[in-house]
Length: 41
Image 1 (tube, rainbow, N blue to C red):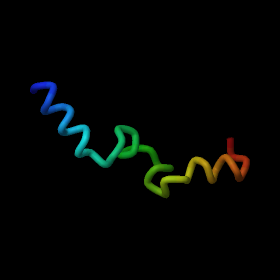
Image 2 (cartoon, helix red, strand yellow):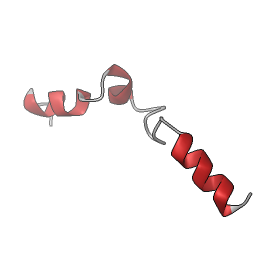
Image 3 (cartoon, rainbow, N blue to C red):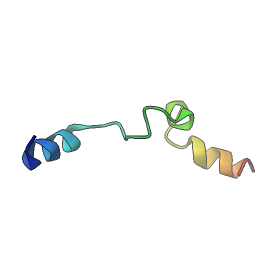
Image 4 (cartoon, rainbow, N blue to C red):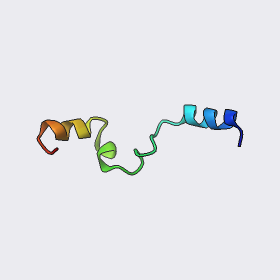
């Protein structure tokens, strides 16, 4: 793989590395912030 290929793939990606597995990210983009406001953290 070349550097250009890697950059192209990253630029086209719309899913973060953690986003595929973190439950909060599957609920909503602001789920963690919502939990902070609710006093969870």
